[in-house]
Image 1 (cartoon, rainbow, N blue to C red):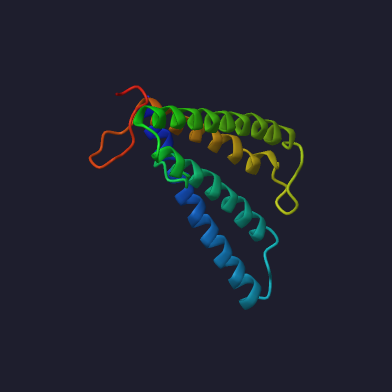
Image 2: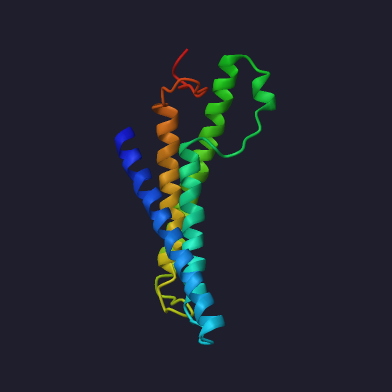
Length: 164
């Protein structure tokens, strides 16, 4: 399972890097065309917006992998270790339910907008919206991997819920 998730994460990271390069090139090209050549591009702002959304959603999936999202643990740190694991398991179940909800509703959104063209490029709007369910599935995979197959790295505080 961990190998599959790592392969998916590698693909997501490559996609984020590609999106970042595309965004930089697109915005730079638009600046040159607008201010130097006096011929602004009609599609550049749209491309930059869509790849920025992709960067945000795929980046959020990468942060889930590293357990890097901010959290409030003031109350749980004061509990006994067994209770801490129970509360963390409950929190992760709620987060997993959220990821499933985002994946399902995001899929409906993407599929429902496949016939709507984007204003400048006339790209089906379902394509940019597909970043939402795709990243939600990657976040869910990362959460499952984190819960059931925690990394064994020195200094890593994360533990499996099934260890004592």
